[in-house]
Amino acid sequence: MKLSEVKNILKELQTISFTLPNGTLVPSHFHVTEIGSINKRFIDCGGTLRSENVINFQLWKANDYDHRLNPEKLLSIIELSEKVLQLKDSEIEVEYQGETIQKFGLDFLNNSFILTTKQTDCLAKDNCGIPKEKPKIRLSTLQSSTNCTPNSGCC
Image 1 (cartoon, rainbow, N blue to C red):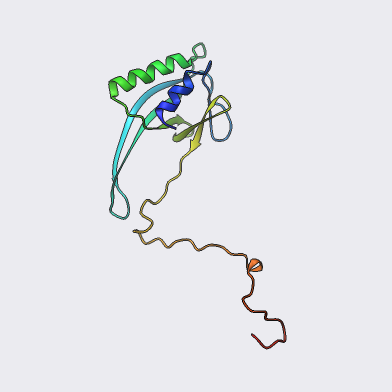
Image 2 (cartoon, rainbow, N blue to C red):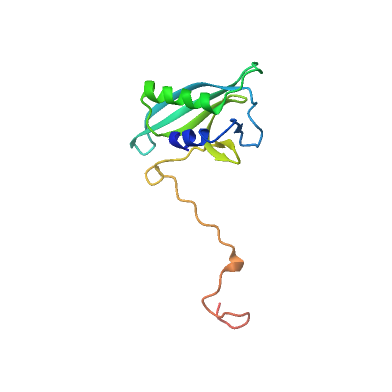
């Protein structure tokens, strides 16, 4: 989800909630402690120089049960971040403290922001020597090109 999409959604919401991939809600007394721009330059295993730019939201649950972040406040934090950090309309990545700091993608469903799992992948599959996975075929679905029957002598 891009930053512009988050801003448009926030304009329509009364409250903000985030749902973890396992379906549990981030406690409602969370704070957005950071909004940042992460620019990553790297070389993949095939030797290609690449770059990735994301906007990072860091969610934190505090022991402050009396304050709730409302959509208008988060929107104002985002707008200040856009101005000060000169943010472009990039994809959002969300950090949240589970057993360790976890990074998630972001989606929106049923009036809640959904933290989605992120996966690693090889970006140079054609260059790094990993063979392509062969398709699995169920033998019972194959049709014979000949009408070979037992005792017909065709085999």
